[in-house]
Amino acid sequence: MELKERFEQAVADSKSLSEKPSNDTLLQLYALYKQSIEGDVHTDPPSNPFDFVNKAKYEAWSSLQGKTKENAMSEYVALVDKLKV
Image (tube, rainbow, N blue to C red):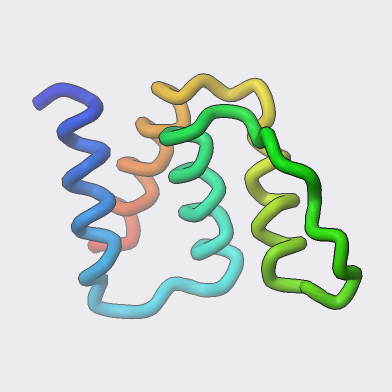
């Protein structure tokens, strides 16, 4: 199975995990997903200083700046596989 197919399967699997991952793990999944799909962050950070959720999501994604889409997909697949165990 090629990487894109494994990634798509991991995305589907992530929606039916037996336990809800921690917030840190959810942020990691979000950032890897966004990097896999869109590449480097291309939007401005949230302007509302009290928008903690979106600020955390933005920071998690921007921390992956420069990571290739393929590497992000591989890491996403590995993380979901680890969470399924």
